[in-house]
Image (tube, rainbow, N blue to C red; front, top):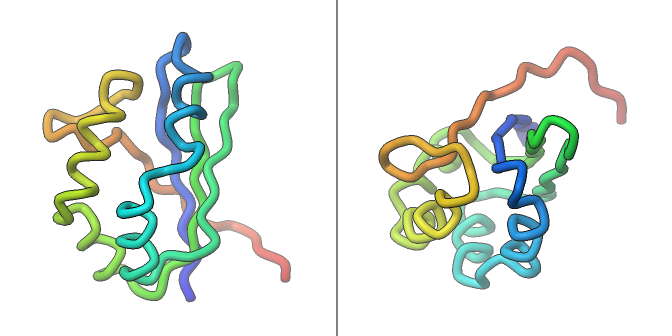
Length: 104
């Protein structure tokens, strides 16, 4: 199991909308995530900075990366891009974080 942490950015006026769109996320997207070895996935909001902190446990980097090619993922990105900082392909602008400490 690999722990992944990353930051994304939501528009300051869209905090509630971002949360609403995740309650719940689309069932088909959840299935794709699970089928690609993702578990224990959480996203937290720092409302003062409009930053999102994501944490997920994954089985391997290749499966994690392959999620981006899934049509439901691309559809989700397009759905979310109006309220997030996004790349031209609608993927969220994201910065991976390096783990510097862990305790079980």
